[in-house]
Length: 181
View 1 (cartoon, rainbow, N blue to C red):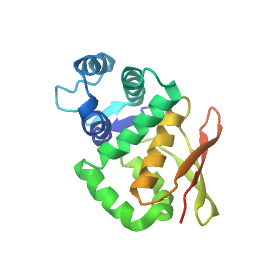
View 2: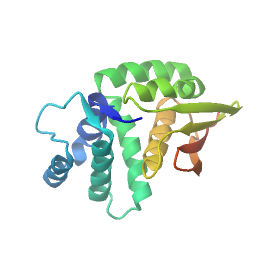
View 3: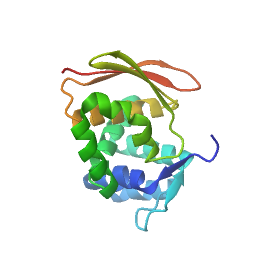
View 4: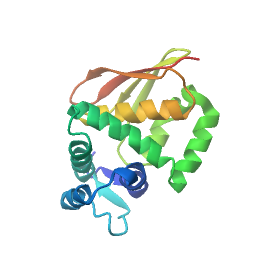
């Protein structure tokens, strides 16, 4: 899809809420240079390349002693934590917690699409506490999404959550998600 966009409440969830306490003047300036000015009202949506660049900037700035993959995964986790503090995220996670991990993950397409206009997800049931999910993200975004899935599973009350990257190629990534009942 051309013209991939990430909506403002997703940006708010990560960069305003999720990283609020970790935001430094240097990081704020580097994000501004990448196309995200946190000193002004957020735009309704941001181009996907700007989103990716800003995640990369934050990962390098906040987690310099970690691998790129770890930094991106940790930021995915921060997105879920921060998104729960937004008006939309708070309402959405109240419903998702009531659904539990399986039903929450089965609704992943709707959840991701509330934050962007491009996510495509296919779910395959592997058992009572295990699903396989394919998503159309590639490159370093696979680690960010891994962190999002992991934090979302914990937020839904899924103990012993694990998200394994099974396969990735130019079209997308397959994850295996499991938890204890």
